[in-house]
Amino acid sequence: MPLRKLYSRKSSSGLPEASGAEKPEPPSSKSAQPNVTFVFVVNEIQFVNGHTSCVDEWHNVIPPMTAINYARELKGIVFRFHNGAVFPAAEYVWERPDDGKPGNIGSRQSILAPFIKCEHYKTTSVFDCGPFQPCIFTGADVTVADLKDNPPPNQRFWALNFSHTEDGISKVTRIGKRYVAGRNASWVGSLVPSGYENRQGLAPPSKGLRGDLGVILGLMALTEPPGCTDNAFRYNWNNYKWMRQKQGRPGRPYRGVTVHIAVESVQGRVSTANHISAFEENGIAVLG
Image 1 (cartoon, rainbow, N blue to C red):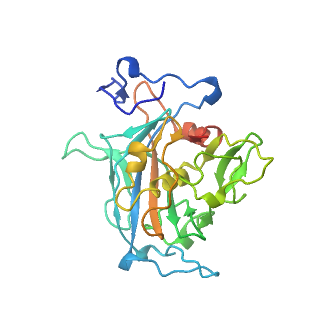
Image 2 (image 1 turned 30 degrees about the vertical axis):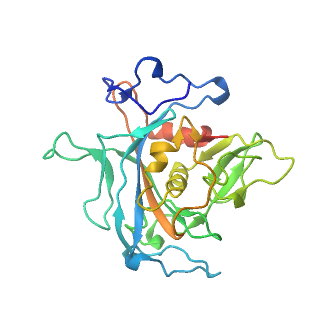
Image 3 (image 1 turned 90 degrees about the vertical axis):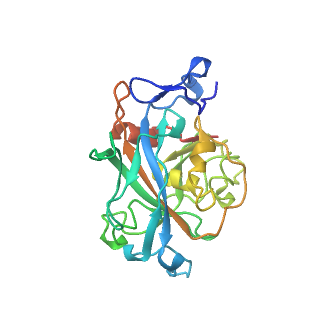
């Protein structure tokens, strides 16, 4: 039975609890996944003057290399991923004390209560820079520090690449191949551009996508028009399935998002940074 997005009440742990026959069933052995819970937010990056004028050595448009060239972000809402179920986490918000300062996912017990930060897991900035650079990324918040001031390997932008497993699983990497591991990947053309399709006749059928969750969540957000990136997680990703139909990239290119992922450990469901890392290494974020 597919996992549903409708929940009737919260359990004693604070996480929504499915009601009646709609309780999520454990995944089958065919698609068994590591247990993991995390919260995340995707914020839309704004450019000073509304655009970027930076180019690389081949004159492809790329994002600014300096934080001063980014304007105020458009905040998203915080979502929770729990063993394949994706739904808003209304008790959490994203807060940044000031432009150019690091922010955090966290919560308040009341308006006047102190902000309780969740444990940070990772931050990734992901950009769509047009047909020749449809996805470049770096493991840092580009609005906070100049790219050159980040620790390696995040002193530069990386193009989307994949490492391959023999059974057709594609893993997001900085260095690898510019096409996915398996044939007929259900998410090629809708999540990643069709130029990444594997056209080798002897390639195994695609079994899914894994790897850097910051990049994967950023790609998902960029399938939606500007101002609507949260819809990717409201409607199109659940039960490890990507459900958006194949279509062109929305809006204009040269857009970017920052993805912030945090650890959530609540009573009865403890998930650590190691659990999230294990899911990136051994789980499958998108089946097919």
